[in-house]
Image 1 (cartoon, rainbow, N blue to C red):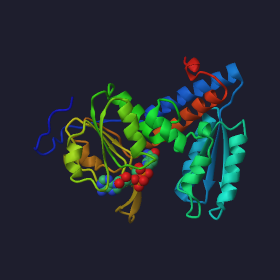
Image 2 (cartoon, rainbow, N blue to C red):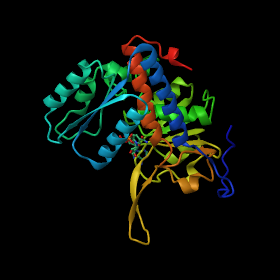
Image 3 (cartoon, protein in one colour):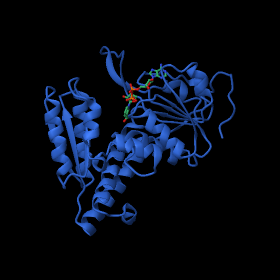
Image 4 (cartoon, helix red, strand yellow):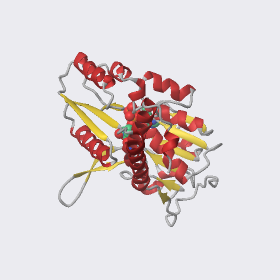
Length: 312
Ligand code: NAD
């Protein structure tokens, strides 16, 4: 258990264990590839993942390209639908209906955010729930809250896998989730509750966020504000999972350059936390790995195969 809070200056000789999301994600992908080979060899099923990208946002394009590459590397089929930013909602819905009906497609992901003319929730809810590998639809949201089945959103699932690997038993731990979005904060809260953590959710209206943070054995930051959480907000020995991906400009001899930063001020937090995810290289790689994992689960469910039967 973490020690009680000390009001002394951080012990700079202490360095938290760095949670290596790249390594864990590589292991998850290797296991997925093994399961895909068993599915193909034993059942003649090759899982297929379809991604729909609307518009040409550079970050989304890179993300979609990586998804396609990692899908193929795991031995699955990758399908991409690229639509212009001006696309009408009806045309997007037609594409979803086509993919819902395509038996070679087991998982469908619509890259978010969508342009303004599109009702994002209507699009997400048009996905067949058993193909909704992002787990954002109304049905999967309900299943996560009230049952133990259904598709679990990839980023919170990735955070949970890291916690299980680096913390082990989560039961009874005091967890704080900062951020209450439908994509990250709320499903994260549900997953931690399922693991019997005592969960608090903080958000932009929370009074004294620092004090809330100081009580947490497990701190999940999903805010979108670079470096908001400082080292002296963290309970000594706590496990810190930084979901934030923020592009910041930093000075360099060749002029300002862009780099990625998390929601936690890593340089101060690393001297207080017991374990911490870096940004990049922490939660990020886990998201795509969990997407592949969900696609295998979806392919199994659609072919009446017990995913447990694929274990080595
Ligand atoms: P969001 O904007 O939908 O939600 C942000 C949440 O932070 C809100 O609930 C808001 O109440 C809370 N918040 C804002 N300011 C706050 C403050 N000052 N104090 C406390 N809470 C505050 O964002 P999101 O989609 O949940 O994403 C959060 C971050 O995670 C972003 O940086 C995003 O890029 C990143 N993200 C990373 C991955 C990944 O794969 N690593 C995936 C999804 C999102």
